[in-house]
Length: 208
Image (cartoon, rainbow, N blue to C red; front, side):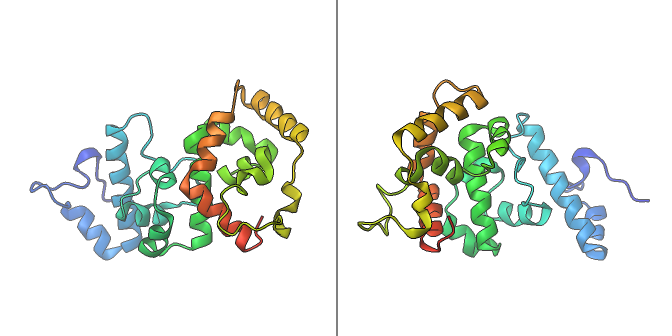
């Protein structure tokens, strides 16, 4: 049985891909790719001990999708949140709907933290756009919606929230997360270009 350890997994004596790994990739492509990907990730994690190099919290981003994202310079959740959405569609070849939802989830984790993002599951809130819509309703997008008209889009009518309801929801979320004031995070989410892109597409395709 072939065993390869630690920092020597990817590097041979000449600093390149070790012969053992090259053999594994050539004979068993799927196993070889897993070895390379995991070793690369382990190396990055040793440099970034806070775990910021991972895609934790994005279960749909499996090993193969991680490899596609890393090829275009997206190495973790925060990179994904800040990525240029349209470019990722064309450069990675990943399914646009899956990629968009992953970016939306990455935004939530990036601005709220993984622990708070996980707690929001109680409210069936799993993405940044869902949190913004839950707390602000149509105010989350109508002020800058590129397709805005005099009337509220039919698909978004259930996001017409009264001031009282917005205050009630805000208080409930703050208590649930143990946050004094969630407004700064929500403002950052709403003003982010990727959130705007995601909401525009959800509205345009009646996906709210």
